[in-house]
Image (cartoon, rainbow, N blue to C red; front, side, top):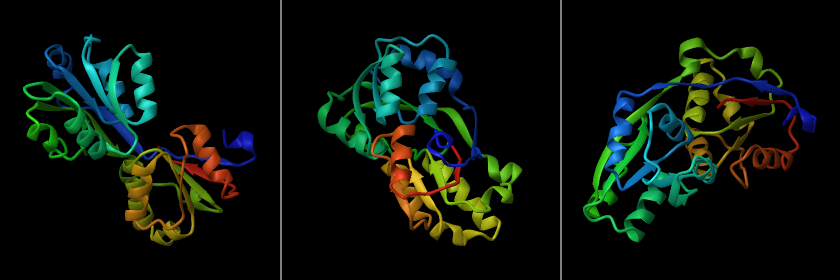
Length: 229
């Protein structure tokens, strides 16, 4: 994508994923669930690893791209929101019949365990399952400093990747790059995380896709890009 547009792409994965402690319980938990809350693409992928999942369960999904993939897989997406988990939960609490309904939250190990309190307050019976765990690949293997030379922009697809990269830059003594490099975020949640981490030149994709990211970068007219995921 970047090379085709005339740029130099440098691939540098920031994260690694392993099955979560509760993955084995997901299939049986969803049999009796009314709703399943899917807060990331990785959580949706974990559904395919959990075993046969009843397609009757209705999904609450964070992100248009994840919702689209869920529909392609045959799931009924009844609510989606591009503005993050909290926005989705608040919408669900205000719009869905939740009293005495069973909600299963398929989450990663970094998720806020209190995020679904509005659903509990609305009368839902919430069960959260850690179906995957996210690891900081840079913390385990290091970030190749050669990738940073002449770097103009970084493409980021998640807040976790943003944190991993920022932490790696601090460890390398290159934290000043946070205010120099252009950061292209897949969505507003990732963009907000970047700003909190000290990034000052953040652009956000108009749509959560490779095309949206490329358009955001094109507006900056940048060259080499690093792509942590």
